[in-house]
Length: 413
Image (cartoon, rainbow, N blue to C red; front, side, top):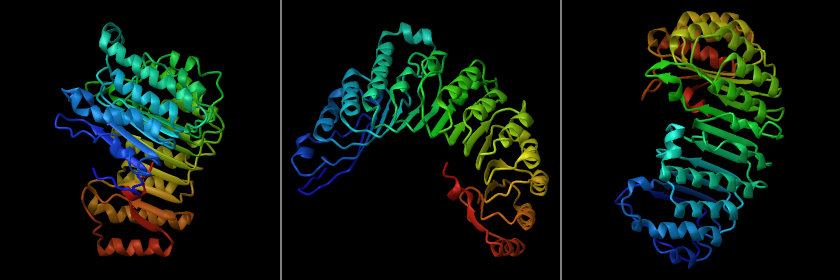
């Protein structure tokens, strides 16, 4: 690494993940030149220590992490990704959290050795139990950031021992994400029920393998009730954006009651059970303007699309992240009462029918005159290759002020 006078590093990534890892230079390399790393704003740490047999090969990296929090005073973004957490690494994380004015933190326990193991095995394993205690120290250290932290994300975390009570101290938190997490138990929300949160964005995306017996969806079990209570505890009138993959009538009703100003909803549906009721309840949310739906199996896609056609009223931005057969698509365009402004659709294996899909979009626009943006998938590694008939319809759509884009350019949620 080359540093020179005048170097002004504001983003730094530290990766420790293989046996031929090349250690950082001595810390004096970073502290000798001004400003160097003194104006550091973002620090990304990826430490997969279980892949390294000799901890002496990353001693300079540990020194860097232990001293950076004392040399710098303006780190606002930090990502902590690890697979094994020893005391030395834990202490560096704690110093960064306690001493830096962090506004955003991501904690990712990818490939973590304790993750997704039965509770009794964790408690009986002294080494892993110690590592869980280190994670708990990190989470409760977040209290030091109660006046600065507004965005907090967890990925691949197991909360079966830890719980969520640490969240009650984070009074400035506006965005909270649980990505592929699990282990939520009753104590996850017991301490939160009386806390007044002011979240604007919330993502509750449970680890999906937990709901399967081999490849068969096995239901949500007791997690459904727990997720319902977490929604009631964390959500209120300030929330406008929600992503949720435990979808059942109970959780949708909790959302309707707790989030009167919800405008953005991203969901994933795993079963056709109560499908009509769930879609109907969602369509009743009058504040909802953006709706993205994923599904686990396409065999109930037709039923879902037709129900949307019957009940969708308020949504302006619609993203259906699955293939829609032509008959269901036609039904939707003829019956939908919502005045869509932005619409993203996927068409798989229907290239010879693509003209018909475009024709139904054109017919929809002639009735509603609301659509401004249409997103269509190109297919894997493919560019648009329109036929003359399709180009004629596209020309008609453009004459009606509709811009057409590849769907992957529009899917930003």
